[in-house]
Amino acid sequence: MKNPSLLVFMNIKNKVYYFKAIIVVFVFFLASCEESKESIYTKRLTNLIGSQINKQMDVLIIPNEGCGGCISDATLFAKQNYNKKKIIIIFTGVKDKKLLKNIVGEDFLNKERVYVDNQNLFNSYETSLSYPKILKIKRKKVFKILDFENNNLKDN
Amino acid sequence: MKNTLYISFLVLFVSLFFACSKKDNKKKVNSALLEKYKIKIPLDNKTSFWHYSLHISKYKNKNILSFYNHFDNSVKVTEFSKQKILKQSEIKLHHEGENGLGEISQITSHLYLNKDSIYIYNPMSGRLFLINEKSNVVEKYDIVNYDNINDDVPYPEPNVMSPMLKIGNKIYFSCGLNKFQKRFSNYNVILEFNTKLRLGNYLFPFSKKYDNGFWGSQFKYLPSITYNNRKNKVYFNLPIDEHIFEGDLETEKLISIKKIKSSYISEPKPMFKNLNYGLRKNRDFNKEDIFSLSNSDYPSLLYDSYRDLYYRVVYIRPDKTKVKKGDTLANFSIITLDSKFNILSEDFFSSKTHDNSMIVVFEEGLAIARKDLYELDEKSLTFSIYEYKK
Image (tube, chains in turn brown, green):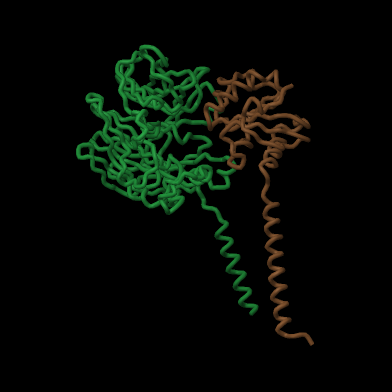
């Protein structure tokens, strides 16, 4: 017959073991539930530009509000380099389209690779957009999110 | 045992039901601000809808609507009478030269009194300019000395909802925080600038409620003032305080007049009960923004000298989930008050149709800009004119 006190001890030990195992599983579960920023961006990009996503490309997102100087620089860059670099340009958080047309020109807004994010998919705290961002796409998915800098964009 | 289980589930179910039910933000108390008519202001190609500084004044029996248009750096002026546009003009502002105002930002504010007296406050330089309709600088005043970085004075931030006020030789500015304070109830936030003596004096501190916690982003600390010319008193409004305060310009004393509560929002609560959070170096500004944009407040109080009424503007902000997704636009209500601050009515407005920051008082009533009509016609800026009716 087994020692009763040993049985009690074994029971407690098993309980502690199972409790710890549950905690570990729970933590992994929570971690897997939190969606990555890259995943959020990929979904929204697909929603906005759909079939235009290439296997490998860059996307420049320019918010309407935030760092004024950064936004102006990014906007100027987009206009000057539209033909040189095959990037997608997305204007988000646009409250007044007339003002945007005045700033960039209506012709520019009508170009094939220029979008206005009317649904404000990229203008949320989940995407944390107060600075222009560059999305790096590989295999049709966003794999890197960078702050806008000329060096971060691919050449043709 | 079964009964206990049954009662427990019932209690849980009922609690969940009430926790999940949303407040009806669209209920109306008394609807008494009635639309009289609309006025359509023609816009040129370079002028869009929203303006940080917008003003309606009266000069030689004509109403004059003016606003600063940042895109082409000009003040647009429209003379009108009722719904009829009489004349439109623009005052082109200069950056450099004899009549230069320096680098001008979008948050430049102005005060149009008449064609010979237009004040322009340039927050980039901290200078106030008096110009005429030909854009000639008549006077310039140094309001803020940005060179003195040790100065712990608040910076002027006049805007549509709390414009510059000219009373005699003095101009009054609402000010925003320069540095976060250890104590707010002794920190004066209205700048009184004497244009004759060229001297500034700070009046009227935050209320004691501000010492009771950290209230969020900068705009929770931006007061608004309005002037009652019949009583020669200013009235002071703070975003997170339900009280209205009366300021005596002679004695510089501020007293609490009344608690004016909205029926659409509950009492504003701080983000943290500890005021000292605001002094930390590693603040989470993202979190502060989300909190501030999802907690309702009172941004402005306006006095209507033509009808001896007050209007308190209430921002009914969206919940946290919506704000996180980028939906930060607040609906609003306007509480109409009589001369003794009794509530006469409270009217709800949707921000999908009416702009919550372009609200001005003039002879005909309360003018609120219509964004829905601008979306249909970008060549016009339309205002709905409201008047209180019993």
